[in-house]
Image (cartoon, rainbow, N blue to C red; front, side, top):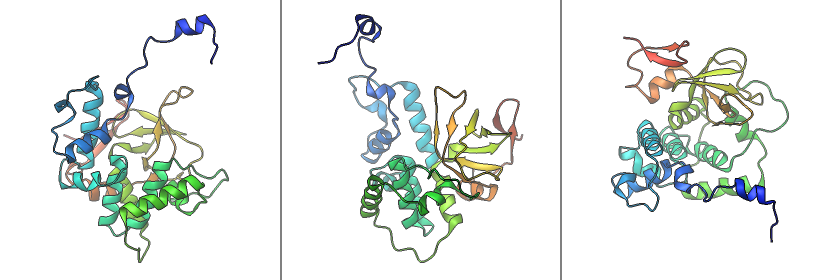
Length: 255
């Protein structure tokens, strides 16, 4: 039995917001596509998904290349489409073992160790070498059993970081001033002080979340990025040079 004041009861909504109105719809959209269903709108829902959520999910899948043969391969893994894309790209580049490990670490929500470290190319490389919680270790083993990556014969940081970029194409950012970032998709974000990526001008904000105590999205885990990596992953999207529009706080293509 739980007791609480009548005023508290009066402030509560009559019904909870349906999960479909709160959840990230990209995993469901990818699964339906792999099953041959023509989008989220093709089903009769008890509560219809919000149009903005459907649009966001479909746009993310488009950026990940899921509306191609890649989509079925991504859907093989019981992970978020971003992480499925990471594994697919890592396998393609010969770093599937480390790619599967990073996907598992991100899925488990593993955090950077508390102790300070020297500057690195990526927080994810630090996580690979860190001690993990027992729950994360189980997640890593489970993902490896599903992915069955071949044993890596070499370590290729560039290939691994390009795989991360392929999974977070909308999170490319440019360092502005102090702890502020400019996201290529538009809008600013704040750098988490715990990150070890401190010197690069361009980076990928792998972890981004809205916090009530922050005026901008908070970017935790990060990895270095560069123009050659963007060209490798998105040759059609980099066909024209891009400039960063600081006034509009977004990026714009040159005419």
